[in-house]
Length: 229
Image (cartoon, rainbow, N blue to C red; front, side):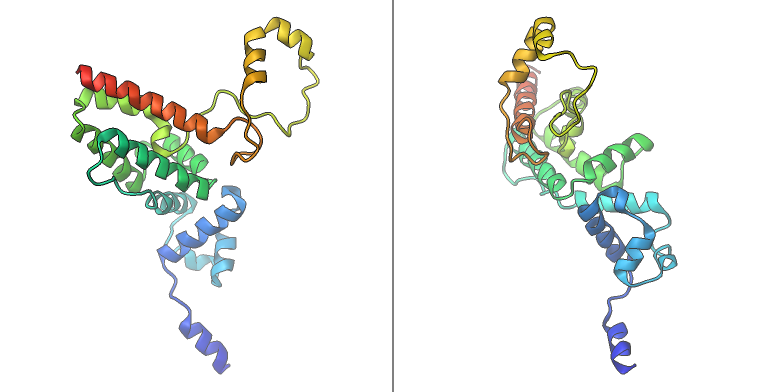
């Protein structure tokens, strides 16, 4: 009994931070679908009802998890020009998402489900807008820039072409010869595209290269518009 009492005494008190950290670790291991108050409580050695004193429901849990991982994004680089500062932060956001693969889907879903992002996301977006304003962008161009950047500001992007490797063959798909004859340019692109088996999303297009290519293209275009304005 004495040993058990000492263990209980040494255990860190339950807190919102501990709950969110445990939830992030659980999602990192099994994805957002693996989250449940029961599993989090089990990992913390408490009863599920104890969690609700700190996190009211699953929506609040997800918002807290988003804020926790967004806080991992590097602060703005001191003394950097606007383009370097934006690029460094976006790539830091992307590294954060690679550490927490579930986060992009949760961020996207939560942004669609509410009128305002979480406090950490709001602070991050406000900081990014501040970088553009300090870099000489008029506010109207900042508005357009944020639309153009879209989810890429947070380190991920919506892809038009998804990797099809590992899928079952489509029984209704056209034979390769007919596909090439009917859609020659699409077939040419599919055959010529570089593949990267070390990609974080598995065999397919080099997602990191494609992400940085689009990011740099966007930043170069915004620089031209900023200079013209």
